[in-house]
Amino acid sequence: MKIWFTARNARRDELGREEAERLTEAGESLQDQMQLLREEQAEMHERIDFAERLLTKGPPPAEPPAR
Image (cartoon, rainbow, N blue to C red; front, side, top):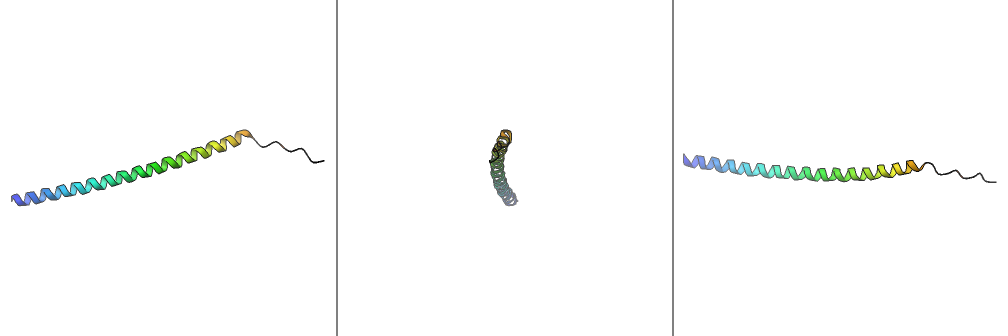
């Protein structure tokens, strides 16, 4: 009976390691995705700032009519 318990505990430990590895990989994947989102957000923020600067300048002055 002791062998059965030992085998069962070994299998549980193996499943625990597999689950830990799976969770670690999932966590790393989420971190990578968050980094991509941060980079995209920063790029969008730069574009919005650029558009706001253009809009606050107003339209270019009209050229005088040609004679």
